[in-house]
Image 1: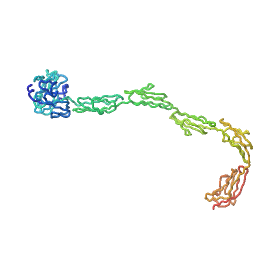
Image 2: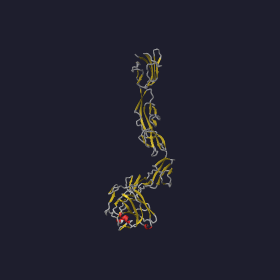
Image 3: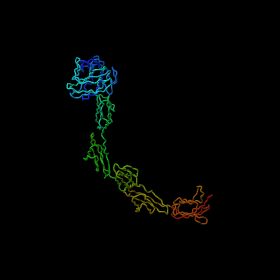
Image 4: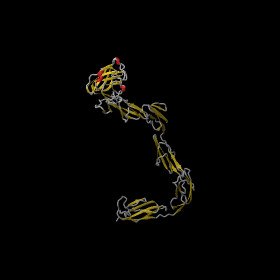
Length: 562
């Protein structure tokens, strides 16, 4: 067996997929060795000793003319031509168990001719010693063709191979080369980011998707196998190698501190209540009265607070509740204000009330400077009220009588002081505000204000005189529609009393009659009919203001239309 192994040129391209006997490969690479060499000291490891060695840089080969079979990935692989008897070996994590079946999955390429190889086990990396095989033969492989083949190499571990932790494959026939790769036992990555998760504001969470011989990308742009996140996002992580790729997505929700706002300081009307509500998230509640519900019904004025606690935060809020009554207003009784005094009325309805005065004022008070009625309306959220007051200003009348006054003979002598309010006392004992002067001469009066604001005195001289009262009577007028001298009337220079004007035609028929000195004749009869141009008679009766007796005057007036 050994001589056959030694003198035949054999070729094997070997790819280790995985160890089916629950073993793991310790050595990252498999090397071919010459006679008398140990695997640990193989010249191929140091790239010396006259071997023809090719390399794969991750995308292309150098030194050899074939590609890497999918789905394998090569990491610093070695390709070794076989000039002499050689073998391929690898070390297991644990020793073989005698009496058990051991299976090895490989992918093989034979460069030329048929290929078969023997299978050996050993306790060290030394396979040859002075051209003698230092290993235990456990089986062989049937003749292979020259194409790529996926093989399962299996054998039953004999008793004398028990405990061995090296497997050797030794070509027995064929020509070509052996290729061995550093990546073995590779599978498609597994990525599991878990379920969607909530984190507290300010906290971080780390995700790890480490897989053998894999590269990584994250939706954040990171390329490492793990990432730490402290913000809200939908995170995607992907791992990939030559066997494929896998990805997963997870939603990260950052639970921010909630803005707890039970309500602002509040004013409500007497008899009402207020329901306070804290946010309805998954939390516990503690109000200042010891209650633990999400809501609190309050009906008393005061300060109320709540503490809300969840897995991330403890926050508090408070408000002050005040009660408001419907507005009330009382401007008091009507009042009088003495000469020169200004009174200030104030209506009270609370700071939230709206005021409306009949003066246009919009505040709780106004300045009053003159006699009159003043009213205000007050409105707040609880109702409205209004009131009015009459304010009278009393002024001292000063010199309220002239120094003297003359009355016409035949007319009453009357002094009228009814425009002044107060109590009167005249020099003859009279107490009326309208005083009938009994005789000419000096007269004195004292006035006392009803509100006791002042006492006024004054004196007047009263005399009688004879008075004339000229009267102007026209003798013609022209009611022809030209806008000039269209009406007939009598003009007095003093007010007439007992006045009557009557117009007659030439047959004595009454045409017009009036007792109003201001009424004029338009040239129509008493039925409103137009009358012709003619001369008409009049009778005028009156008493002059300053003469005191009735006068009667007659005459004629011409009505001219053309």
